[in-house]
Image 1 (cartoon, chains in turn red, cyan, purple, brown):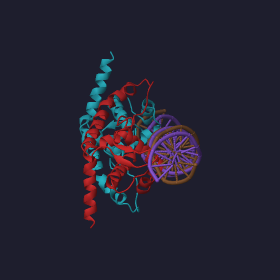
Image 2 (cartoon, each protein chain N blue to C red):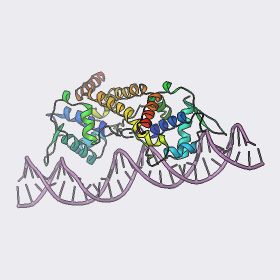
Image 3 (cartoon, rainbow over the protein chains, first blue to last red):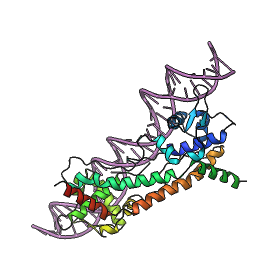
Length: 146
Length: 146
DNA sequence: AACAGATGTAATTATTAATATTACATTAAA
DNA sequence: TTTAATGTAATATTAATAATTACATCTGTT
């Protein structure tokens, strides 16, 4: 129901910011050109990452930078920054409130535990993936092309 | 991006079918009343579950029944029955093809491994959840209400 | 054989969620 | 004060979900 591409775009931006360090000022326009997304979408994503303490963005003059080292930034942190409700509700549940059927009256409670387990396993997996590991993979890909 | 409520509705239907065994003929109309979903949606879901060998649906006369015991039916089987593409692509990736930026050219490959890990952890968790366990939880909820 | 009550499915419409765009106030260095 | 940014609200567009309509088909019953 809702792991949107925002997360992918955010990882893209973070790798870009890391690579551009001391080389170029990273503006939302630049990132919009690199990702193919609208600059306002980029600004919203950067704004979320900023609130989560992952990056700083200079007002006025512009330019984004990492606040943490890539090994301290996990995919779960990135995802959580973007999705205020976290993983809860990642799977849709139909609302059948007010119906007499006992299955209808209890289905939401029955699904709670399975869905929580799924959310928790996604969380654990995401916590095991760092920006550093993705940057490493990126560099491997660059080297393989030579 | 896409774990829809179909999965929840399917579990609802399967519990209903299990509970109604030898008591009532389970038609799509009945299930549509219990779930609050449109009967055609129900028929499509039942059709998918049927193709996956989880239930039988009698043509003409009507009525759905389980083909397997609830302990043999996992949440992953149910989910897979409904989603032909499985979990792949559960997380959206922006398309930035044809762009010069090296990040843009490699981001999809960089994200492949992390996203595969996530999909796999969801799969494993879903495989550990049986219809039986959900039916047990349902019965516990019924008893607690007395 | 005709009827009644089902399923199966294609085609269409409606609704909701995700993404993009426009507009403009605000910021800070030059 | 000009310029090039960010920040964000409001709106529009697009894509994904779900609902609806319509009708062919099936099968037990009368």
